Length: 463
Image (cartoon, rainbow, N blue to C red):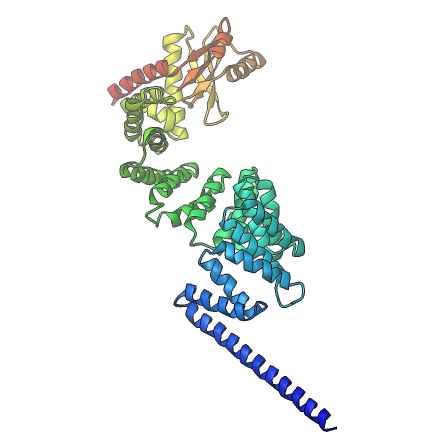
C-alpha cells in the first residue's frame, strides 16, 4: 500500500513537472514571438532571427511560422519563404485554422517574384480550384495571361473577379485593356469609364479612357476627361491637341482654333503632327470665314510639304477668296447673298457665252443638297422660248459624273434646251467625258473666279 502511494505521488510530481516545463516552454516561445514582433518594425532581419529561434524550440509553432512568412516575403527571401509555406501547407491538413488557399497564393507570388511563371501559374490554379472566385488567384492568373498576350484568357479571369466584386478597380482596369486588345472597344470603354469614376487620380488610365472616347466618337466624355488632364503639366500638351480635335469635330471652331494655337506655339509638335495641326487650324479658320488666317496656315503646310493632302488647291482657292469678295460670298455667304450672286452670274453668262437673247425670267430657285442651288431660267422673245437650268455647287472638291447624270436626266424629263453646271471646285474626268456631245456646259473654279472678278469690276463701277 505504501509503495502504491509513493508511486502515485511520484507520478503526480512528474505530471506537475511536465506541465510546469511545458508552461515555461510556451511562455518562452510566446516571449520570443513577442520579441520578434517588437523588432519587426525596426529590424525585420532581427525579427526573422527571433522567429527562427521560436521554430527551433517548436517546429510545429503555427503562430511563429505565420509571422515569419510575411517577413521573409517583405525582405525578398523568397526561397526560404516558399520552404516555410510548404511546411505550413502540409500542416493545413491537420490544422483547420491554416488557410490553405492563402498559402497557395503566397507560394505563387513568391515564384512570380522569382520569375518562375510556370510554378506561379501552377499554384494560382491550385488556389482557384479550391476557391473559383478568389480575387488574388484570378488576378494573378489574369496578369500572367496579359504578359503572354493571351487577352481572351486573361479576360475570363478578370471577369470572375467582377462577378463577386463589381467595383474591383484592378479587375476593371485590366479587363478594359483585354477588351481593347480583342477589339471589344465599346466594352473596354464601359469598364474604363467605371474605373475612372472609382479612381479619378489615375491620370494614365484617364488618358486611355479619353482616347477611347475619341475613337468611339463619345466626344463629350473625351472632352471632360481631357479638360481634367489639361490641368496636369505631364498631360497638358497632348490634352490640348486632342481638345482642339474634339472641338473641331463638334464644330466649336473658335475653341478648336484657341487650342490648336496653343499646341502649335508650345513647339512640341514635329513632322507630320505639326503639318496636321497647321492643316486643321487652316480648316477651322476657313470655316469661320477667317480666310487670310486660313491662307497663312495652308501656306505653312505648303512650305514644308507641297504635296501634303490637297494643300496646293487650298492655297489657290483661298487666294481667290481673299482677292475677290464675290468668290468668298459664293462659298461662305448666306443664302440670300448666294442667290444674288447666281442671278448676276446667269445674266452675265447668258449675254457673254450664249446666243440666247430676250427677256429673262427666273422661274424657280431650288435648294438641292449641301447648299447647292438649281435655277430654272426662261429666255423669251417674240419668236422663241428657251429654258435653261443652272446648277451652282458650293463645294470646293471634285464633282463626279453621278451629279452630271442626274442633271442630264432632269433636262430630258422637262425637255429643256440646255444646262450649265458651276462649281467652286473641279469636275472629274468621267464627268467631263459624259458631257461631251451633250447639252451641258461645265464651269470650274478658275472660270468661275474669272467671271466673278469681272462681275466685281462691273459692280464697283456702278458704285
